[in-house]
Length: 201
Image (cartoon, rainbow, N blue to C red; front, side, top):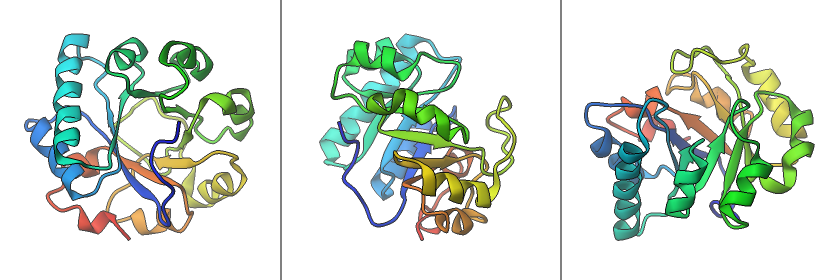
């Protein structure tokens, strides 16, 4: 049920959003070393998302890339492609998703910084999304900003891997690395970049 082998430093995790050259940007980032791609488009139809998922999975398989592809909240669609999902607090519970996806599909769950929630779903999740670390315009329904100090505390106390998210870019990513999360998730910063090197520390 593991997503990717354990690594010595945080993995780079892409959360996609609509982009004029969506496929070209996503595949560029995969080829440059992004470890997880969460395909996220709340307004897209299942048919449209299916085309995106199929294209990305084919690219990963043909290229032999060590990259995990997840869907944002579309559990039934994820089952169709035998992939995992990332779920928010307003989505289906991981325990319910596990019944649909089976024992092998990776499931991530946003907890903001509610460490107490982990115990309720620990057996069903591979990691938790924690944030927003910084102010973000990508998601307007986010909770209050956590900051690096709180992120460090959550990373220290969490019993499952932590993926930091929210307002992270090449200007502030170094401070996020200092918190030692398992992964660092970005959307706008990655979907707009032409060079991935500044995001690896």
